[in-house]
Image (cartoon, rainbow, N blue to C red; front, side, top):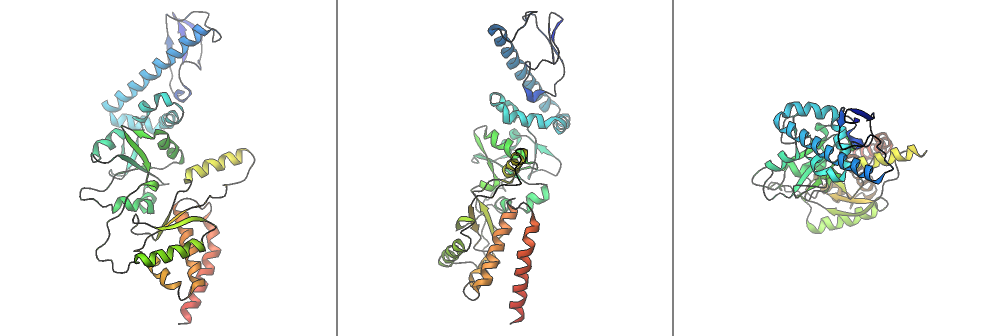
Length: 341
């Protein structure tokens, strides 16, 4: 954006007219209030530029919001091309975060693939008593729906409807949603941190009793003490045997990897300890409890694999190929155990 005063060019491509995240904007600004001898060193001129920057930013955001309401399809095309700048603004421009958050567009579990929604539209569809906006970061829609962190939303205990989840596919979006923090008095919460329980199947007969579950969690805590802070029972799972919580998100770890590499370091840093939550209704968990009393060495290997699988789902395993060796050992022992019967 070039700056003019009474049609006289003051500065071409001025860096002071708009915030850096608005670098996709092209145009000119002509103001009669600007002195021809504009200087950033002068306090008065500096204040004038700051005020102009603030006014222009708010007007452009208002224009974009109006266009989004007037022609949603056209705005979706705009966001597909320039959305990365809007996301950058959410993370960097705290003063205009509320206006920028209105412009965000993401896919949703409540909509068909390819269709996007705004945070305002999400809130309008949510039940009045829902105080959170949920999102799930995954490489694709298919993987998001297969994630153990999505299970609580598929089988959530409710007589009305399943909870809607925004689907974000890039690691940057995790930072964006964390930066939004709150929208229209509703907290923005990752599905990984959601406090939801699934509907229990009434025909579930094989389920660990509370006493057996306590014994198993205590045993798992000892077996996995190098990796977990504790093991606990959860009701958030339906299809998966276990899940890890209280961990660094995969996107945060990737960002740390980029920082390490830029500073001449290696790959991902070592994972910090986390909480392992087990599903007391899952057949693997039930049979693992039974196996540990008859073949503890084999049970320990299976427990380690269950934990590794949970870490893989959480994005804490940098390269899945490192699992192959342990899997081969486990398969060999399972085959040996089976042939002895």
